[in-house]
Amino acid sequence: MEFTRYLSYRFPLIRGEDVRAVQQALITLQIKPPCGVADGIFGSATEATVLGFQKYFNSQIISDEDNLTEDGIVGPKTWAALFRSTGNTNVIAANILAARKALPEIPKNFSYTAKTPPPLNQNQCLRVKTWLMNNFGPEITKAISGKAYDVDIVCAIACKETAIEWLAWIDKMPPEQILARCVFDASGDYPNTTRKAFPINTAAFCARYNKVLTDQLIFEANLTRRLKKFQDKEWVYKGYGIFQYDLQHIVDDLEFFRDKKWYNFSECLKRLITEMDSKLHDAKGNLAEAIRRYNGSGQKAEEYAVHVLQMTEWCRVTLAAA
Image (cartoon, rainbow, N blue to C red; front, side, top):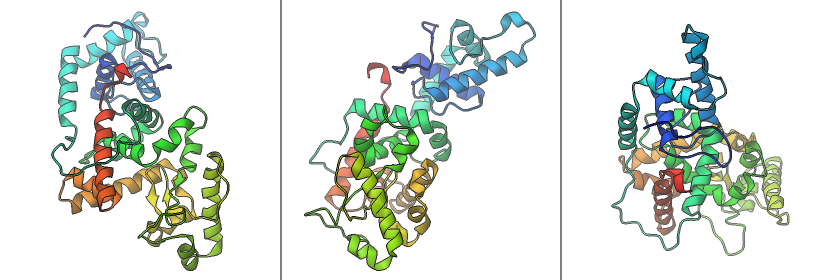
């Protein structure tokens, strides 16, 4: 692969196999800070790692004439230095192919069916993945290293759980505010809805927990309702965080809800991983079944798994055409 264009962090984001090759080279060299996954998207994490390579390279050379401009941009000189350090682009291409083969296989043969399409289309899924990787990519990559599921599955679960709500906010609100407002699911209180898990509704929650905590969670729900131009309600919502950690877990994990830990991406990711690891164990390593169990049981859970697996496939597509 030859140098064909300057690669930098700008909008719209640059995408393509040349970006992926650069990322794989940076990963091979173990440059700090890490760029995350070789996903073919030149985001802020990739820019930081390119800058790290340029600084490292300049610290190793003797002649100032060979210095790289430390700007986080891959121009012809940085391109040449990067691939000279790793060998050649043919080696990088082989590494990319090996990395793709190492990704967890997306299950194809399962009996689940879905009566409705996924909540997002392919381009929307790619936007969600771009936002997640630009803001939390290195953290996600590190946390799931060695797991039976990958970044794309994590992104697809976010697509299914909450992104339909916050995708319209990403150009208007900072990440921390988006995380804070991921308080959804009025099931059990919203008219004509029921819920089996505790609490079945706000009255059941209030009967078990004090009024201070009840009012706190109602307040958080109403902050989200106001953002969506809805009137306030005296409802305790049931899903918290970007991956919708269910309120039923308050029995064993009071601090998450009392201390508003869903405001913190690390706390949300930690609980997603704990749940997925548990469901994978119960499903004896069957990824599709683990995803279904992550949501629950019955037709809706089967549809959930179908949607997540479809959106995982979309998240793996190179963004060249997006």
